[in-house]
Image 1 (spheres, helix red, strand yellow):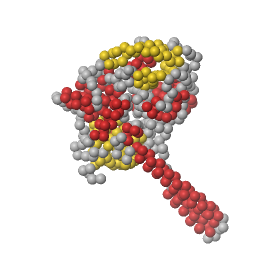
Image 2 (cartoon, one colour):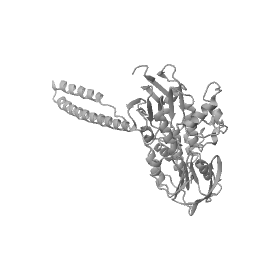
Image 3 (cartoon, one colour):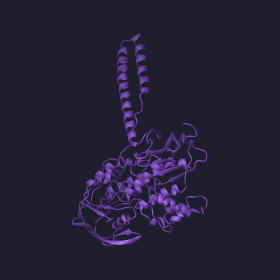
Image 4 (tube, helix red, strand yellow):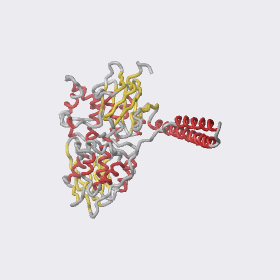
Length: 483
């Protein structure tokens, strides 16, 4: 690929967060101008780290990250950093530039229209819903008009209309774009190639086509590698058997035996390392609180946002043990606010039965203390779990010995999600309140999580914009906040 057509090249790039946490090992790949590329890999493999290397936020330990001449880069991160949550919309967009931009107002209006968001520029970022914040993140990258646009999990928290709008935007986008996402259907709508970060080898594999093409190619490759190794193993055993036979004959036959052994050793070296699949979390259950019966949650009324005003609505929801409620509604209508008030027991018009323990999965992971280690976070809710049981459960969520003493704040967003599920499995709640539990999670883990939720025996309130996930969970009642 010529230099003019190449916008980005990684040349033998190595990077590690610490001695025991390598991310890249002499990794190499190229991205051509105008391409739309997907970056995929296991939770915690280091996909967001690659974005930081591209943007220059961090430097590689060795090798080189080469951008084309005068190429500009902008990143839409997974979440808005906590120090920006109290900025106004105007201040948030101004912070995207190193120097003050005096004509920023019309630029803000243009990018808000591009992401299909109507927003008062004097409102603080924290007051927006998760889906609206996702649109603001995308707009903050677009407003910089970069040559290379990096999108980190852009569909998280977006409703169906938001994903459709983003998909059309990317199909029509004329510049270069690299996207991290676990949403296969979204990716396949626009992807021309895939960069796959292998968590085992710390190399980046490059594929042409979309995600389904990637799966087919990997499957074919693994079959060939296994077949070749099986053929070599057969020949190796044959040579070893002949070597042992001739070795016992003595005389000149020992030389033949030695030759056979060397041939076997050479064939051993020709064996290939079969590509390993991403690890998937183990099947798990979330035990429900025992000794509670009757009505666990009742909702007689609730509030939604309509035309930037709070509107009160009546309802007649009653959840008992084993019953599940799905909340639906467009971004910004108030789903997260309602869940938060339910989980805290402060919702007007709603009541949780006394002594019911609530397990709350927040989309922003604010139920986690980011200064705690993973071990401290799990221990705080472990109850009667023994040390070995705690570590075994954690390992099932891919929280291994190298992660157990890491700070929560240092984990990837996907790993924070897995820690949150491990905590729920220890808490034994009577009521589960789940706000977008698929966000950031590797698609391989989602069927396991859906199965655990489907088997949960307590009461549940769920918000999710992923219909394929919801379809795997038994739902008793749907409350549509749009109606």
